[in-house]
Length: 112
Image 1 (tube, rainbow, N blue to C red):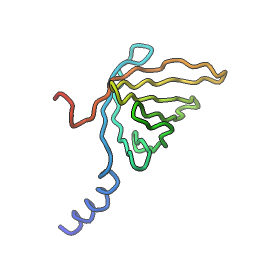
Image 2: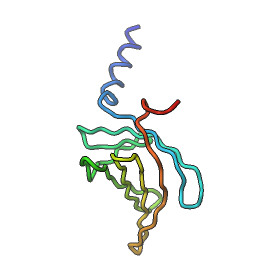
Image 3: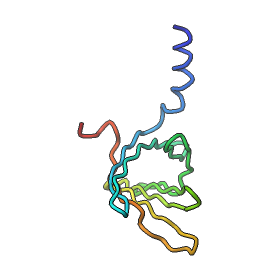
Protein backbone atom coordinates (compact mmCIF):
# COMPACT_ATOMS: atom_id res chain seq x y z
CA UNK A 1 0.00 0.00 0.00
CA UNK A 2 2.82 2.43 0.84
CA UNK A 3 4.45 1.89 -2.57
CA UNK A 4 1.18 2.63 -4.41
CA UNK A 5 0.64 5.78 -2.36
CA UNK A 6 4.21 6.94 -2.99
CA UNK A 7 3.79 6.37 -6.73
CA UNK A 8 0.57 8.38 -6.72
CA UNK A 9 2.22 11.21 -4.76
CA UNK A 10 5.17 11.37 -7.18
CA UNK A 11 3.08 11.43 -10.36
CA UNK A 12 0.17 13.59 -9.20
CA UNK A 13 1.85 17.02 -8.77
CA UNK A 14 2.92 17.15 -12.41
CA UNK A 15 -0.66 17.06 -13.73
CA UNK A 16 -2.54 18.63 -10.82
CA UNK A 17 -2.71 22.12 -12.33
CA UNK A 18 -3.08 21.05 -15.95
CA UNK A 19 -6.15 21.48 -18.11
CA UNK A 20 -6.60 18.40 -20.28
CA UNK A 21 -7.65 19.35 -23.81
CA UNK A 22 -8.62 16.95 -26.60
CA UNK A 23 -8.57 17.93 -30.28
CA UNK A 24 -9.65 16.28 -33.52
CA UNK A 25 -9.83 17.36 -37.13
CA UNK A 26 -8.20 16.97 -40.52
CA UNK A 27 -4.76 17.52 -41.89
CA UNK A 28 -4.20 19.28 -45.20
CA UNK A 29 -4.15 15.92 -47.01
CA UNK A 30 -7.47 14.79 -45.55
CA UNK A 31 -6.06 12.58 -42.81
CA UNK A 32 -7.79 12.38 -39.44
CA UNK A 33 -5.75 13.89 -36.61
CA UNK A 34 -6.57 13.50 -32.92
CA UNK A 35 -4.34 14.80 -30.13
CA UNK A 36 -4.49 15.22 -26.39
CA UNK A 37 -2.62 18.03 -24.69
CA UNK A 38 -2.17 19.34 -21.18
CA UNK A 39 -2.22 23.11 -20.72
CA UNK A 40 -0.29 24.41 -17.71
CA UNK A 41 -1.49 27.99 -17.37
CA UNK A 42 0.71 28.88 -14.39
CA UNK A 43 3.88 27.38 -15.91
CA UNK A 44 3.08 28.71 -19.41
CA UNK A 45 3.65 25.29 -20.99
CA UNK A 46 1.79 22.82 -23.17
CA UNK A 47 2.49 19.10 -22.97
CA UNK A 48 1.92 16.79 -25.94
CA UNK A 49 3.16 13.17 -25.95
CA UNK A 50 5.34 13.72 -22.85
CA UNK A 51 7.08 16.70 -24.49
CA UNK A 52 6.80 20.17 -22.92
CA UNK A 53 6.62 23.25 -25.14
CA UNK A 54 6.85 26.81 -23.80
CA UNK A 55 3.85 28.97 -24.59
CA UNK A 56 4.81 32.02 -26.62
CA UNK A 57 1.43 33.76 -26.59
CA UNK A 58 -1.14 33.39 -23.80
CA UNK A 59 -3.87 36.00 -23.61
CA UNK A 60 -7.65 36.04 -23.32
CA UNK A 61 -7.99 35.17 -27.02
CA UNK A 62 -5.44 32.44 -27.78
CA UNK A 63 -2.55 30.24 -26.77
CA UNK A 64 0.36 29.76 -29.20
CA UNK A 65 3.48 27.62 -29.15
CA UNK A 66 5.92 26.22 -31.67
CA UNK A 67 7.63 22.88 -32.12
CA UNK A 68 9.87 21.05 -34.56
CA UNK A 69 9.26 17.57 -35.95
CA UNK A 70 11.43 15.82 -38.53
CA UNK A 71 13.27 19.08 -39.19
CA UNK A 72 10.08 21.02 -39.93
CA UNK A 73 8.97 23.97 -37.80
CA UNK A 74 5.33 24.25 -36.74
CA UNK A 75 3.38 27.11 -35.16
CA UNK A 76 0.27 26.09 -33.21
CA UNK A 77 -2.49 28.59 -32.42
CA UNK A 78 -5.33 27.48 -30.11
CA UNK A 79 -8.30 29.84 -29.89
CA UNK A 80 -9.80 30.33 -26.43
CA UNK A 81 -12.92 31.74 -28.12
CA UNK A 82 -14.05 28.87 -30.34
CA UNK A 83 -11.60 26.03 -29.57
CA UNK A 84 -10.04 25.89 -33.03
CA UNK A 85 -6.41 24.79 -33.31
CA UNK A 86 -4.54 25.84 -36.44
CA UNK A 87 -1.24 24.10 -37.12
CA UNK A 88 0.93 26.10 -39.52
CA UNK A 89 4.02 24.58 -41.11
CA UNK A 90 7.08 26.71 -41.91
CA UNK A 91 9.31 25.27 -44.64
CA UNK A 92 13.00 25.94 -45.28
CA UNK A 93 12.23 28.86 -47.62
CA UNK A 94 10.08 30.61 -45.02
CA UNK A 95 6.77 29.71 -46.68
CA UNK A 96 3.84 28.98 -44.40
CA UNK A 97 1.17 26.36 -45.09
CA UNK A 98 -1.82 25.28 -43.04
CA UNK A 99 -0.96 21.74 -41.95
CA UNK A 100 -4.06 20.96 -39.90
CA UNK A 101 -7.27 22.48 -38.60
CA UNK A 102 -8.67 20.92 -35.44
CA UNK A 103 -11.50 21.56 -33.00
CA UNK A 104 -10.61 21.32 -29.32
CA UNK A 105 -12.55 21.04 -26.10
CA UNK A 106 -11.62 20.63 -22.47
CA UNK A 107 -11.67 16.85 -21.92
CA UNK A 108 -14.11 16.98 -19.00
CA UNK A 109 -16.58 18.89 -21.21
CA UNK A 110 -16.52 16.39 -24.09
CA UNK A 111 -19.93 15.25 -25.29
CA UNK A 112 -19.44 11.58 -24.38
